[in-house]
Image (tube, rainbow, N blue to C red; front, side, top):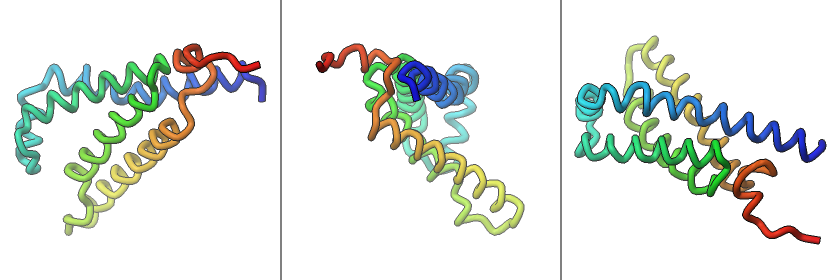
Length: 141
């Protein structure tokens, strides 16, 4: 595969992965801050307002980092931490008895699990050739 095609594919992948987190922060969590904090408190998250501010920062910083490919390993780590915590608190299918609810939360859990895998992949491999990280690396002969 050519470097150009590889670069374009990694840019597209970073954009696709980041879109959901940007939309979550800017389209839901920020404009509905009080309501989201109440839901967080209801599921047992300690200090929900503080944790929500942290979640928003992690989502925005992680998404921008991935989109630009600037310190993308750190950005992917921020999103990974968010996903681990959100998945544990909001998609705890193991605590449900209603079969339909259990199935729905299992699907959400597995979706998040797959995205966590993508974040681990970026942490392990970086952001690809068309990224600010790649531009910062010294050229080898």
